[in-house]
Length: 344
Ligand code: FE
Image 1 (cartoon, helix red, strand yellow):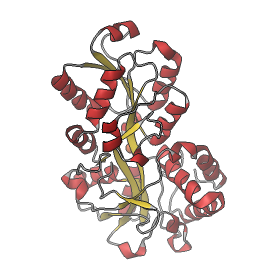
Image 2: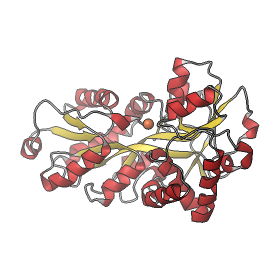
Image 3: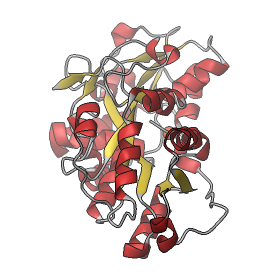
């Protein structure tokens, strides 16, 4: 099963965002009184601020925001409960959005605009959250040493012919947990365990702390292939276009490329729900989609919007059409299996 995502699929690297607190404290009462939107964002300020500014310019609605990692923002929403000033939560990874929904800090939104603009597999079925950009996680290989014909996809990297030739990022990163969660869904536990065992025995080096280091190891000849989010490939490509690395679209013809999202949901106790929905709808339109996707070399979630020129140059691919909520639903099982396989 796969969806033709015409490579227009995309996401954000907000992983290490320092807490940025708005200048003035925002109280719930204060926010409710004014035509003001309060946003908690796990996406980096430099990625969201241009959007907020443009929206304010167009509508007059002021936006106050806090940026932090997803975990602390979720904890904060839970602690604040009905007193939260937040109207909207923006975060990366479907697993985080799924968790927010499970914790009950979001509310279902019914919107024809969002249902039209955001594909069904990139949003919560109840309307608690909506994908806004898509990030693709696929293979990157050393084109000077191996051919694209040698590659197939994620599961094939467990084959003994890749012994000593594979580099992987740590399993502690949610990106890999999400990828393995989709395998658990599709292949079941036993087959997934076999794949993980194969990966671990094929490793050329201890796991890497991030996607960029894993690709640098491929470029340096330590290994031939790795698995990364394509925006990291894009960053390396900008720095050094002649590093010999190329993208390979995994599992074409079967499950498709693993995709994840950055996205947003209206908070359960939003004081300005109408404004939050209006902002979310605007985020799904072409104007905002270009900004959201292009700022981090991701793919627009809205399939009618094209990615940037650089991103488009990587070619089109078939994306996995499983609902991205699987990343949350199967995350614990994925972690358990990775532990069992000693994938660090
Ligand atoms: Fe990232």
